[in-house]
Image (cartoon, rainbow, N blue to C red):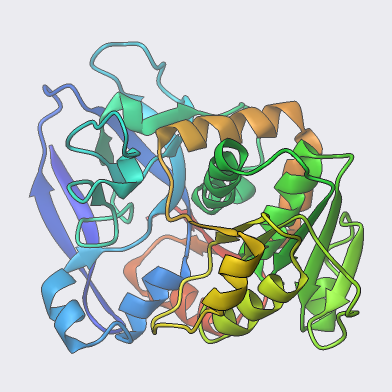
Length: 341
């Protein structure tokens, strides 16, 4: 069959390309229905990744956050119409010690490989996780972002000590919101504190135990463990504050991506015996755990609905550009494309 792929060919310019795909293979064919725009997609769209990276990566279909419906399963295990979330990470090998999302050989959609902006996506069945039929698909669209927080918390659970009375999350954006929400559901008896700088963003965190402005942190405030979701230039300031306020032998989970190296007060890291734990992306097991959380705590999906920002019906090429341009001016939440093209 001929599949249409909507690729970014240069900053702010999309073109349709055609690929001949066989449905005789073992891949499950999925029709994307809801896609979510990520900051990484925007760096490609605006050309801010830099000339060399753009030259190496483009042309490429964007989007690695998305859900869809099964239209063909050669093994007939997934009925037509089954709602699924698509896992963008595609490992080419297995390692007993290294997770799939850290293997250097793994491929990641919309980062050098075509993402989900296609008429149909052909995927190995172990890259699909079935969704509850009644799930809000606008929320489900950015499940991949939720899995990043779930993955970091899973790593934390394996490596951190058991004193977990107080968690601090730095960063009042989308990822900080999700991290606080998941922590509060998994550790209902623990205190979860959000540290941020923007009042109207902090007002969305209605479910946390406390919200603290980063320039008003009491000197006596301490936490057992922390998650840094600030990213960018804010990472360094967040890490400094975490090191100051975390209790000895706590774990610092780093999630915020910075384009430049940041300074870390290693003297206090050593003096306090801290564990600094980096996490990036996620794997199929994290997607399954996330969907299990959706099922166990339906209210999580309701809270995640607060992150649904602009919703665009995309039925033609020009409307993709409109969605990306609209997302650039959005200061809160996720831009979702209802994929009707």
